[in-house]
Amino acid sequence: LHKARFLRHMGGGAGYEVLASGIGSAITDTIFNPLELLKIQRQLRQHHKPKPILEAAESIRKRGGLRLLWTVALPETWIRSFAVTGLRIGLYPSFRDAGSADGEQQQQTFARKAAAGMMAGGL
Image (cartoon, rainbow, N blue to C red):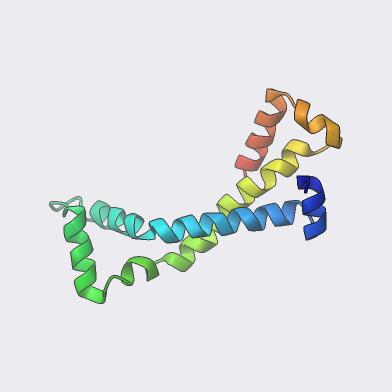
């Protein structure tokens, strides 16, 4: 199906784009949350000698198991994903296509796309 028809069929454009972007960002953050947690732990120990990543992971495992790598701050990360990344990426197509007829979307100028990116990124 053509994207515009698909989005109309799904019940809307911008809301669907924001939801899809937020879900994609939340999945990515879920996968990389352990690395983010280890990075933050290293940053907090800068006044001491920082632990190597594997040693930091081992200390977290000893304190509460490997599930701690995914459970600490993950709900907050998901909220940020939806509020920031979901809105910025999800609203870009709506800003880009605002005022364009279906046939004009292929011929948009760089300036129009840059302006849409600045509007979406400015949120």
